[in-house]
Length: 101
Image: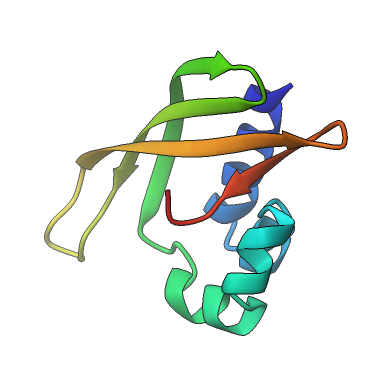
């Protein structure tokens, strides 16, 4: 289930729907990062190309999701790759992203 939630969030981000992606943040993350700040920080993802789930490792109610992001830095700097490791927690039956971990 956490893999599906992470993929759904990234699908939204790749489409530029940062407001939708914000809804996947844990309640505690939303307290420390208001929606307006999140939207400003994320920009819009216009240079992100693809994301691939590499692995999911869970221990209890916490999972680490490792992703490979392909993106363009600028019009003349393309096809870069970056590994991202996200922390997801299970709270009341729902998986939430912990922002900034």
